[in-house]
Length: 618
Image (cartoon, rainbow, N blue to C red; front, side):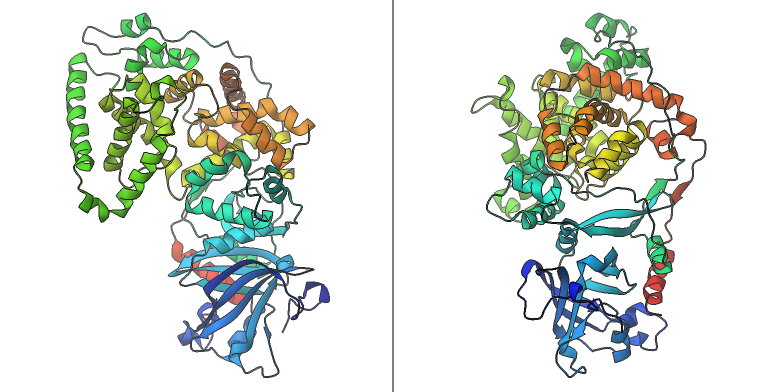
C-alpha cells in the first residue's frame, strides 16, 4: 500500500506534541463499499467508523488527522486496504480495527470536493492519486472547510468556462501569509493568534454573513475564493470529479477576452437634474407621464431636484405605474394604505405569549430594535432620543417582516430604508411600498446563502478582467482577485461610500436601468480603475488594498465615477463582437454565440462522481 508517510519530511512523530488548529467530533470515514459500486460487498454500503477529526500543526508539517471513537459493522479488510490515504495501524496487531488512524499531510493535498447525499461529505484527493472521504453525519461541515481555506491557498476549478465544484489546492499558507498578517497588523482580535482568528471570523461570516461584514468589514477580506485557474488537472479521476457538479447553476460559455479594447470615448458632462417644470410638463391632462424614456434619461444624466424626489421616486420604485392617471394614483394610495395597515396590525397585536413561541419573529425583531437605533443617527432627521422618525423606521421594517417573512429582516436593510423615509417626509405607507420596490431589486443581496452577492462578485471580476487586466493581474498576485473588498459597495449600493446627497442621486440614476441593469458593477470598475495606479505602483498587498478601499469612504467623486462608468460601457459596446458572452449578457448587448450550460441531470453528475471515486482505487 502506498502511504503519504513515505518520507521523514511528511511525517509527524508519534511522540511529538502538535498545535491543535481544529477539532470536530462525530465525523465518519466512509466505507468504500458505498463508493465502489462494483464491489461484492456493496450490500454493506452503510458500514463506517465515526471518529474525531482534527487539523494539527507539528514542527515540520500540518496534518488532517482522524481517529475512530465508535464503530459500526466493519467492512471487509480489502475494502479498507483500498483507502490509500496514509492511514496507519498502531501496534503490532493489524487486525485490531480500533487502531486505524488516518493522517493526511496538507502539503500533499491536490484538491477537495464537497457534496450532499443524505449527509454532507468531503472527498480529499492527494498528489499520489489516493482519495479519502469523510462523512459529517451529526456535525456541521462548514467549519472544517473554513479551516482548510484558511490554511491553504485554493481556487475553484473551471472547466469549459464553468465552475466544477472541485477546489484546487495551490499550496499552504504560511504564518507570514498576507491574510494572517492583515489580521495581526490591523489588531482586530489582539488576544488571539492570527491564524485561528481568521478561520473563526470566516466561519462566523458563513453563518451570519451580513452581521459579520458590518462588524469587521473595514479590516478583513479574502473570504470568497473565485479565481480562475491557469492549469487543469490531467488525471482521469480528477476529470470525472470535475464533471460531478454539486450545485444546479448555469454559466455562460465565453469568447476569449479581447486582447486590446478600443480607446475609451469622451462622454459629455453630467447634465442638470430633473426639475419640477420638466416633470409636470411631461404629464397629459389626465396626469399620465407621456414620455417615460425622456424623463429617465434626464434623471440618468443629472438626477432629480430634491423638491420633486417625493413624487419621482414613487415611479422609479414601482409604487406608481408610469402611465397611471391622477385618479388611478388616488386609488393606489388608498389601497396601499389599507394593505399596509392590515400587515402592521398583525405584528402590533401579537401577544407576548405568541411571541414566546415564535423564535424567528423574535430574532427579526431583536435585530430591528438594535439596528434602528444606530442607523444614520448623525443626521438631524434621526438625531436625538425619542425621535419619532426612528419609531417610523422601526414600524416599516417590522411590517416588511410580515410582508416577506421568508426573507424577514437582515442587517443592512435599515440603510436602504433610511433615505426613503426622509424623502417620503416620514410617511410610513409611501416609505414602505417604495422600500418594497427597492428590495425587489436587491433582495438577493440579503439571502442567507449569499448567492446573489457571490454572483455579483464573479460578474465584477469578469468585467475588471476585461477592462483592466493589469489591475486584475496585480490583485491576483496579491491574492485579492476575489473582489471581496467590494462587498459593502454592492450589499447596500454604495450607501456607506458617498455623502448622503450623492447617495440619493446615485440611487435614482441606478433605478432608471440606463444604460443597463448592471450599471452599478461598471461603477465599481470605474472606481477601481481610477485607483489602479496607486494600487499597482505602490505594490499594495491585501492589507494595503483593504485600508485604501476603506479610506475612499465619502471621498469618491460621484460625477467622475458615473462619467467613467458610462465611458467604459460605450468602450465595451464598441468591442462587443469580441467580448466574452458573459460580459455581453451582463451589459445587455446582443450575444453572437450563446451556449447556456444548464444541466439538471443530477443523476449523471452523481454517476460521474461515484465512478471517479471507484476509479481511484483500481
